Length: 83
Image (cartoon, rainbow, N blue to C red; front, top):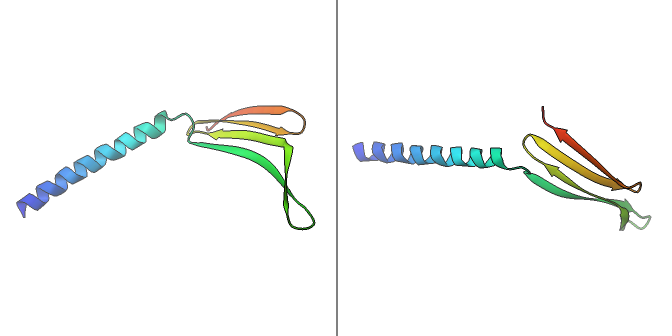
């Protein structure tokens, strides 16, 4: 029984170290999610048409983010903070 308790202690310790390493990596990552924005239009025959003049890139992080969207009037860049 004593060996089982020691094994659980070491397993818990290594699990906590792994969780702390994941949290540190998440905090230091600039962009958590990156997405490509494309505008699609549904035609009358239920097919999609991608509009090439409406594109963009979106980057979300834990504390900051950036949107670069073009809806036909030129690229609009907006940076935001998670406060």
